[in-house]
Amino acid sequence: MTNPDDKLNLDEIKARIRVVCICKGIKMGKICDAIQKGCDTVEKVNKACGSGNGGCGATRCRPVIAELIARGGKPLTGQQAAQHNEDDSEDDDDFFWKP
Ligand code: FES
Image 1: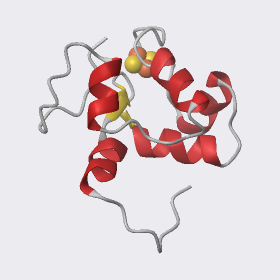
Image 2 (image 1 turned 45 degrees about the vertical axis):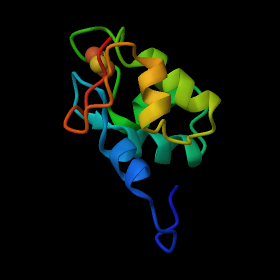
Image 3 (image 1 turned 60 degrees about the horizontal axis):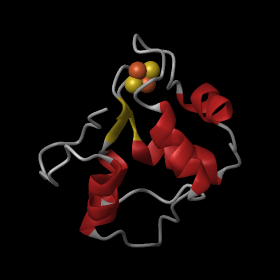
């Protein structure tokens, strides 16, 4: 969970508002907060956040959530997100994962 006294830089803000679960519109910040509160499996994160039960059957969001768990709930920022997604050209207006 982000401490309200901590100031986020622009990359962190962009990462937190990036939609990870496109089907349900769940943003990375909500997922990272759940992980930092103790959700240590994709299933626990999905239950806490409402992600993973959309039309795609979690094929799009599951890998990203698993990576966020591996990172201890630290959001993927611009360059890291681009590495995770070849089609992501770091376009600041694109807050969606492209599977
Ligand atoms: S993107 Fe999460 S269920 Fe489809």
